Structure formats: structure tokens, C-alpha cells
Image (cartoon, rainbow, N blue to C red):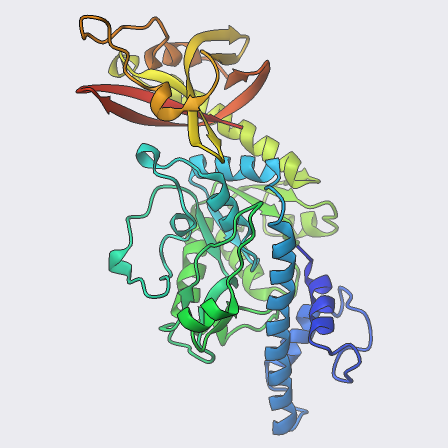
Length: 436
């Protein structure tokens, strides 16, 4: 996705303003960014007449709509291909960690990634984009009372709105705010058509808060205030904060102020994911925070985040009481686009230094087959010799991570979920392991 100043240049071109005398005559720079210019347009200026300020307000709205057009076009190109492996891995770890994700981006890459990946929820129910948005927005013609409960997963707080949120112009009550739903999938782009918008979201425009230092009018929306309050409470409780691609620009007074108030002097661990951090590390230290851990790429960060999750998971499993899981089978879980969740029983547990390795019994099959109850000639359940969860608890003591051997390659286990299968009057308890 384009950075802010690049987005500004593209929006000016799309709006047909490249030769307009109101457009900046110089390139955007750190001292005069697209955000600075939008801030000047957003508020009445004392040296301008009423007509000139109204013209600026109209230009601001024109640029806002152009931003939406630019990002929708970029999204269409991104969703044409399968999701990158690092994104699937990151979403999987976020899901099992039930993390809080705060974003200032408008795009729907995270929501589409969740819709495409098929993360397992309770008893195999798939996690949906609505779950990560916590059901705070309604779909057209669907009341809140008719929607299913929210499944446990990570939470996504989109503080500046989203390309698929829609609101009536100048509606500060938030009553008209709706979510069009996630139609796209990676590898199968499916944008909302104008006819669908006309029928389902009449009179509404995308709810995105344009990049400007002054956003007071937008913060009157009840939904915006709730999102920011939730983000602030999460930061207050955080033990670690990861800034992924966010440079903490001085012009962003609201976010800088919130981070300062929530984190200053608390010794919270900080990750910075940015190939060109410049003065960001110094700004982090000015908040009284320790020296941050630096990552050049999101892939590098995802690997480190995965390893932290794996270590915490191994520790939590080792602390469990093995006697509570005497007959709980072990299953390796994987998702395949054509048949959904697949699995294979674990046939062996190996110790390799501080690593516990789970070896699967064979090829992945649909989960209902992997966990099927096997009955003998006399109708009694056949007792297999595969290890049980209690065996893994014992093996995990002192381990730094648990891996699954697939096709000769170790994959790191980042999550487990306990389920059961009932068939022929027999209930089989099993634990599914998810790896990246």
C-alpha cells in the first residue's frame, strides 16, 4: 500500500488536480507533507474569506473520495494473487494470541486475509472478519440481534475508518454507519459493485478519516470515540507494543499524545518494524521507554513474533495437569482451500534438545476422517497406540518450542484448540495443533 505522501500524489492525479492552482506547487516533504496540506484544507483559515474556506472544504472532500478510489484500485491488484505466506503466518499467530491490533490504515487486507485463511474457532467454526471487528458495525438489512456470537480471536481497531465502512455525509450521530461486509478473497477479488452499493447503502460514502493533523469533527462519531477509547485502554494494559510501519510523525498529535499518556515511563517493551526508522528510535526513548527491538521487514518481525508465541505455548502446556487429559488424542491441523480443515493423528513425540517434535501418522485428510472413531468386530472402540495429550505435557517440560514434522520440514506450533468428535455414540476428545 502507498505511504501517505505517495497516496497524496496519487489522489491529486485521480482527482484531476495536478494542474489546479490550489494544489501544492512543490513536492511533499517531511516539513510540508500531504497530511499538513489536508490539515489546512480541513479547517477554516482566518486569512481566507468564507467562500475560500468553503472551497477548501469541497477540495478536502474531493481528495477524500480520490483516496478511496486510489486504495480500492490498489486492493483489486493485491487481491488478485494468493496471500503471501508471511501474512497467513502473522494472522495465525495473532489469532491464537488473541492480540489487539490498532491500525490507522483504511485498506481491508487484514479482513480479507482472515476471510481467505479460514482460522479455526470453537469446535471448528471458522473465524470471520466480523469476529475481528467485534461485530460493532451492522451489515445492510441485518440487525444486531440476528447476528451470531463473536468468536474468540484477535481484535482489529481501525481508528481512521475503512474502505468498506459507509456513512451518510455529515451524520455525526453515527446512526447511518454500516459495514458492507468482506466480499473479496485473496486469489478471488470481488469488489462491491455500484449497483450493490446503490441498493444496500443508498446515500452513503466511504467512512475514512483523511490524513490531517486536525480531525476533531470526525472524532465526534460515537464509533470513532469507542475505538480510540478501546485502543487507549489496551495500550495502558500492554506489556509489549509493536509499531509496524508507523513512524510516529510529529504532525500526528492525537496518536502521539495517546502513546505518550498510555506508555510513558512504564518500561513497556517496544518493537519497531521499519526499514527506515530515522528518528523514530529517539522519539520512542523520549517517552521513557527502553531501547526498542528493531526489525527491517515485517517478515523478520513475523518470525520473531512466531517464536515468542511458540515459547509461551510450550510453557503453558508444560504447566497443565496431565491427569486431566488421559484419553485426549493429538491431531495436526491444516487448512486447504478446496476441502477446508484437514488433519492427521500424531503417531510419535520426539525430544530434540529443547524442541519437542510431533510426527504425524500420514497424509492430511478431512478432519472428520482424521478423528474418526475406529470400531472392532465386536463393536468396541479400538484403542490405538498413539500418544495422548498427557504425554505431550510431560514432554513439554523444559522445552522452548513444539514443532510438527511435515514432509521432512519442521513447522512451529503456535496454537492449540480442544475439541471433540461424536460418532456412533462414542465421543472422542482431541487437541488440534496449528503450525506456521
